[in-house]
Amino acid sequence: MRALLGIRRWRHNPLCRPTDRHEAWAALAALLLMVLGAPALGLLCGSFADGALQQAARAQRAHRHLTTAVVLREPSGASRFTQDQESAVAGDVTHTSLTAAWKAPDGSGRTGRVSTASRATAPGDRIRIWTDDRGRPALRPMDASTARTHAVLAGIGVTLLAAGLVETARRLTVRRMTRLRYVRLDRAWAAAGPDWGRTGTGG
Image (tube, rainbow, N blue to C red):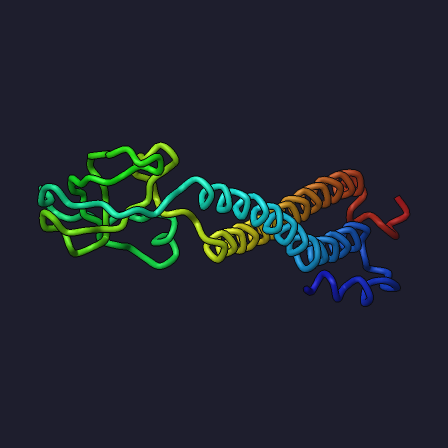
């Protein structure tokens, strides 16, 4: 911000070096990119992500089916904490793996291991599970709100990443300007060094 304020203050200052003005303009460009460019890029990426996720969610809802399964055997082993597409937003959910029987969308019978968050896990209990078109167990399809939440998070992440890259580029540019400034100062000092202190001696 000091460099930005210096653009106006140093404009007519005879002590202002070209590198000071360049540093101020670099700071102004970085500020505009972080305030305007980074959010615009985040919004664009978030919109693309939302479109892709909404399409994936619609495809999942079209090819996944909710059905009723009958528990055949009590679960073996301890319950485990898992995260599916829904619990990634809501938090950890306790899922139990057990053996059950259910019907596929074509009406044929299926038997296998399924994972459920239901507490009704005794043999003969009925639980609700999701299957794909072939009747295989599947995750719950993503809903529109979950897809939008992921898209918003992606847009925020892109915005922060872009702002960080802009600030990093600004710092590297200023560091290079400072290094070149010292190089020129050393050259000027080396050129004036032999005559230092002899001004006005008439030698």
